[in-house]
Amino acid sequence: MENYYTKPALIIMAAGMGSRFGGLKQVTPLGPSGELIIDYSIHDAMEAGFERVVFVIKHEIEDVFKEFIGNRIEKIVHTDYVFQELNELPEGYSIPEGRVKPYGTAHAVWCCRDVVKGPFMVINSDDYYGKDCFKLIYDFITKPTTDNIKHLTMAGYILENTLTENGTVSRGVCEIDDNSKIIGIVERTKIAIRNGKPMFTEDDGQTWTELDRKSYVSMNCWGYPAGMFDLFDRELRTFLDTTIKENPLKGEFYLPLMADKITKEGIADITVLPVSDKWFGVTYAEDKPNVMAALKALADKGVYAQRLWDK
Image 1 (cartoon, one colour):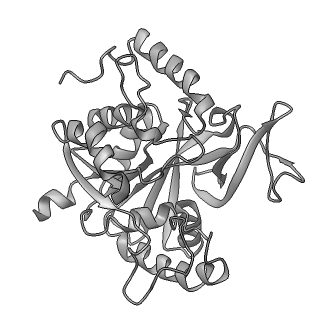
Image 2 (cartoon, rainbow, N blue to C red):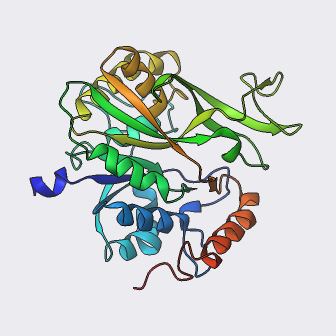
């Protein structure tokens, strides 16, 4: 079983209930034959070489998730389930009083520590990433290395290719050196298109600051080498000791923030793999028609079959 757990894994973060979308968006049919966005990600990952998928979900959505997704996918690829719950914490820690919000994307990955022992890729369940990123990241994380630095990678999307007209989005905005290495990431949690320009606010819309539309941003599409979970554990404990004490109800442990911290410590470096594909997803219910049209266009062009799965 150890060999199975050391195979490169695709971790799909699917615990979110889709509050902004207005429903469980992971199970919303969007493709020409009723496919879900998650189907395209799994299809592209398998094409790139991944042989196993780990879904991060919550117990409260387990039944509906398996009914619409899990039971189908289990017949296609090796599948594991991990549960991101508020009480899933390192020994000695407890849920902050009144906390109902999940602890964030890096906590979701930490929850996979017992079933992922090899290199892994992390994506959101409700984002369409395009084919390129899966092959690029698979090749990167399976490439042998000889030094002691943890070599992370991130699919770099151009900011203007990742926005919706229907509200704000959260993106990790990256600063990159001449060698395609990240030297800084700033998580902007409220980015919107205003007067045709990408802008962010940190004061609930009282003031807005323009962003470079050609900036590379994180779409939570990451690749990690084997042996990362000691660092995830260390950083989660630091988060619980600091951020949660300062902001017990809403503080979040983000993947870009953790990556930025360990990079600045010299423990890791992050290579950006530029992706030209246009992102799309269903952040809001109003995004649905555009996503359906985009997936149909890809099928009409032959990028995908009209019916994605034969079985």
